[in-house]
Image 1: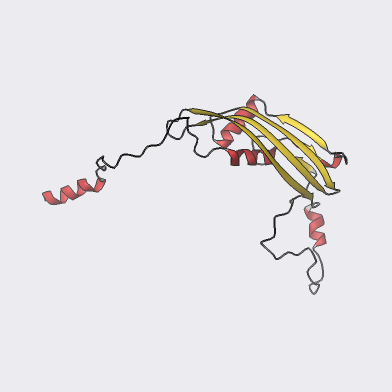
Image 2: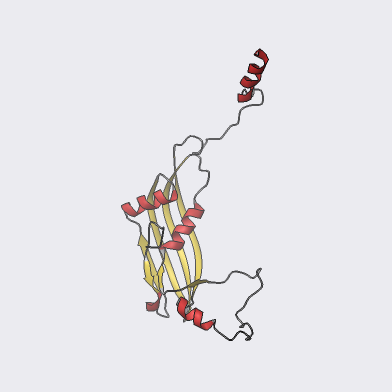
Length: 186
Protein backbone atom coordinates (compact mmCIF):
# COMPACT_ATOMS: atom_id res chain seq x y z
CA UNK A 1 0.00 0.00 0.00
CA UNK A 2 1.27 3.50 -0.79
CA UNK A 3 2.31 5.41 2.28
CA UNK A 4 -0.61 7.16 3.96
CA UNK A 5 -3.22 5.90 1.48
CA UNK A 6 -6.09 3.65 2.59
CA UNK A 7 -6.24 1.57 -0.59
CA UNK A 8 -3.84 0.17 -3.16
CA UNK A 9 -3.74 -1.98 -6.28
CA UNK A 10 -0.27 -2.95 -7.45
CA UNK A 11 0.60 -3.52 -11.11
CA UNK A 12 3.93 -4.66 -12.57
CA UNK A 13 4.61 -2.56 -15.68
CA UNK A 14 7.57 -4.83 -16.55
CA UNK A 15 5.06 -7.50 -17.60
CA UNK A 16 3.15 -5.14 -19.94
CA UNK A 17 3.21 -6.27 -23.56
CA UNK A 18 3.04 -4.03 -26.60
CA UNK A 19 -0.70 -4.67 -26.87
CA UNK A 20 -1.26 -3.02 -23.48
CA UNK A 21 -3.63 -4.19 -20.78
CA UNK A 22 -7.01 -3.44 -19.22
CA UNK A 23 -7.23 -3.70 -15.43
CA UNK A 24 -10.44 -3.60 -13.39
CA UNK A 25 -10.51 -3.40 -9.61
CA UNK A 26 -13.03 -2.45 -6.93
CA UNK A 27 -12.79 -1.67 -3.24
CA UNK A 28 -14.52 -4.10 -0.88
CA UNK A 29 -16.66 -2.95 2.08
CA UNK A 30 -13.75 -2.56 4.51
CA UNK A 31 -11.64 -0.72 1.93
CA UNK A 32 -14.55 1.62 1.12
CA UNK A 33 -14.90 2.41 4.85
CA UNK A 34 -11.17 3.20 5.01
CA UNK A 35 -11.39 5.43 1.92
CA UNK A 36 -14.42 7.25 3.35
CA UNK A 37 -12.58 7.87 6.64
CA UNK A 38 -9.50 9.09 4.72
CA UNK A 39 -11.63 11.43 2.57
CA UNK A 40 -13.66 12.73 5.53
CA UNK A 41 -17.03 11.61 4.21
CA UNK A 42 -19.75 9.54 5.96
CA UNK A 43 -19.78 6.64 3.49
CA UNK A 44 -18.74 5.27 0.13
CA UNK A 45 -21.11 2.70 -1.34
CA UNK A 46 -19.21 1.94 -4.58
CA UNK A 47 -15.61 2.49 -5.73
CA UNK A 48 -14.78 0.80 -9.04
CA UNK A 49 -11.93 1.54 -11.42
CA UNK A 50 -10.99 0.53 -14.94
CA UNK A 51 -7.50 1.35 -16.22
CA UNK A 52 -6.33 0.97 -19.81
CA UNK A 53 -2.53 0.81 -19.83
CA UNK A 54 -0.52 1.44 -23.01
CA UNK A 55 3.21 1.12 -23.58
CA UNK A 56 4.20 4.36 -25.34
CA UNK A 57 7.92 3.52 -25.39
CA UNK A 58 10.06 0.93 -23.58
CA UNK A 59 10.19 3.21 -20.52
CA UNK A 60 7.04 5.33 -21.02
CA UNK A 61 3.46 4.36 -20.16
CA UNK A 62 0.05 5.97 -20.77
CA UNK A 63 -2.82 5.17 -18.42
CA UNK A 64 -6.48 6.01 -19.02
CA UNK A 65 -8.53 5.78 -15.82
CA UNK A 66 -12.30 5.52 -15.38
CA UNK A 67 -13.62 5.82 -11.81
CA UNK A 68 -17.20 5.07 -10.79
CA UNK A 69 -18.17 5.84 -7.20
CA UNK A 70 -21.34 6.21 -5.15
CA UNK A 71 -20.59 8.76 -2.44
CA UNK A 72 -22.47 10.09 0.56
CA UNK A 73 -21.36 13.44 1.94
CA UNK A 74 -22.88 15.65 4.66
CA UNK A 75 -24.88 18.73 3.69
CA UNK A 76 -22.96 21.86 4.76
CA UNK A 77 -26.20 23.52 5.88
CA UNK A 78 -28.27 20.75 7.50
CA UNK A 79 -25.64 17.97 7.99
CA UNK A 80 -28.12 15.55 6.36
CA UNK A 81 -26.73 12.90 3.98
CA UNK A 82 -26.16 13.99 0.37
CA UNK A 83 -25.80 11.00 -1.97
CA UNK A 84 -24.09 11.50 -5.33
CA UNK A 85 -22.53 9.52 -8.12
CA UNK A 86 -19.06 10.14 -9.48
CA UNK A 87 -18.16 9.18 -13.04
CA UNK A 88 -14.66 10.50 -13.66
CA UNK A 89 -12.20 9.88 -16.51
CA UNK A 90 -8.59 11.05 -16.43
CA UNK A 91 -5.18 10.15 -17.83
CA UNK A 92 -1.66 9.90 -16.48
CA UNK A 93 1.66 9.38 -18.19
CA UNK A 94 4.63 7.81 -16.43
CA UNK A 95 8.26 7.42 -17.43
CA UNK A 96 10.54 4.91 -15.75
CA UNK A 97 13.59 6.86 -14.67
CA UNK A 98 15.40 3.88 -13.19
CA UNK A 99 16.49 3.51 -9.63
CA UNK A 100 17.76 6.48 -7.66
CA UNK A 101 21.24 4.90 -7.65
CA UNK A 102 21.43 4.81 -11.47
CA UNK A 103 20.24 8.44 -11.71
CA UNK A 104 23.00 9.52 -9.31
CA UNK A 105 25.59 7.79 -11.47
CA UNK A 106 24.21 9.43 -14.62
CA UNK A 107 24.61 12.86 -13.08
CA UNK A 108 28.28 12.38 -12.27
CA UNK A 109 30.81 14.24 -14.33
CA UNK A 110 33.82 16.39 -13.92
CA UNK A 111 33.38 19.75 -12.22
CA UNK A 112 34.35 21.49 -15.46
CA UNK A 113 31.88 19.56 -17.61
CA UNK A 114 29.01 21.47 -19.16
CA UNK A 115 25.44 20.68 -18.10
CA UNK A 116 23.84 17.91 -20.08
CA UNK A 117 21.11 18.44 -22.66
CA UNK A 118 18.48 17.34 -20.14
CA UNK A 119 18.92 20.49 -18.05
CA UNK A 120 15.70 22.51 -18.34
CA UNK A 121 15.53 26.05 -17.08
CA UNK A 122 12.19 27.05 -18.60
CA UNK A 123 9.70 26.85 -15.72
CA UNK A 124 6.73 27.66 -17.98
CA UNK A 125 7.22 24.46 -19.96
CA UNK A 126 4.23 22.11 -19.90
CA UNK A 127 4.54 19.40 -17.29
CA UNK A 128 5.73 16.13 -18.77
CA UNK A 129 5.17 12.59 -17.61
CA UNK A 130 5.63 11.73 -13.96
CA UNK A 131 8.91 9.95 -13.24
CA UNK A 132 8.72 6.64 -11.40
CA UNK A 133 11.59 4.75 -9.73
CA UNK A 134 9.98 1.32 -9.87
CA UNK A 135 8.01 -0.60 -12.47
CA UNK A 136 5.70 -1.74 -9.65
CA UNK A 137 3.02 0.95 -9.82
CA UNK A 138 0.16 1.50 -7.38
CA UNK A 139 -2.79 2.09 -9.73
CA UNK A 140 -5.04 3.16 -6.83
CA UNK A 141 -2.87 6.18 -5.85
CA UNK A 142 -3.86 8.40 -8.82
CA UNK A 143 -7.48 7.22 -8.46
CA UNK A 144 -7.59 8.30 -4.81
CA UNK A 145 -6.00 11.64 -5.71
CA UNK A 146 -8.62 12.35 -8.40
CA UNK A 147 -11.41 11.12 -6.13
CA UNK A 148 -10.42 13.53 -3.36
CA UNK A 149 -10.16 16.43 -5.82
CA UNK A 150 -13.56 15.62 -7.36
CA UNK A 151 -15.50 15.60 -4.09
CA UNK A 152 -17.89 18.53 -3.74
CA UNK A 153 -16.31 20.86 -1.16
CA UNK A 154 -19.76 22.28 -0.20
CA UNK A 155 -22.37 19.55 -0.71
CA UNK A 156 -26.00 20.61 -0.19
CA UNK A 157 -29.24 18.67 -0.21
CA UNK A 158 -31.51 19.63 -3.11
CA UNK A 159 -33.56 22.71 -2.28
CA UNK A 160 -31.47 23.67 0.75
CA UNK A 161 -29.99 27.14 0.61
CA UNK A 162 -27.85 28.98 3.08
CA UNK A 163 -29.84 32.13 3.91
CA UNK A 164 -28.02 34.89 5.74
CA UNK A 165 -30.08 36.94 8.19
CA UNK A 166 -32.25 39.60 6.60
CA UNK A 167 -31.03 43.21 6.70
CA UNK A 168 -34.15 44.14 8.72
CA UNK A 169 -33.12 41.99 11.64
CA UNK A 170 -31.25 43.60 14.48
CA UNK A 171 -27.51 42.83 14.49
CA UNK A 172 -26.38 40.64 17.37
CA UNK A 173 -25.10 42.48 20.40
CA UNK A 174 -21.34 42.73 20.53
CA UNK A 175 -19.69 40.87 23.41
CA UNK A 176 -17.89 44.14 24.18
CA UNK A 177 -21.19 45.97 24.75
CA UNK A 178 -21.40 44.34 28.18
CA UNK A 179 -17.94 45.67 29.07
CA UNK A 180 -18.92 49.15 27.84
CA UNK A 181 -21.90 49.13 30.19
CA UNK A 182 -19.69 48.10 33.13
CA UNK A 183 -17.45 51.13 32.63
CA UNK A 184 -20.41 53.55 33.02
CA UNK A 185 -21.52 52.10 36.34
CA UNK A 186 -18.29 52.81 38.22
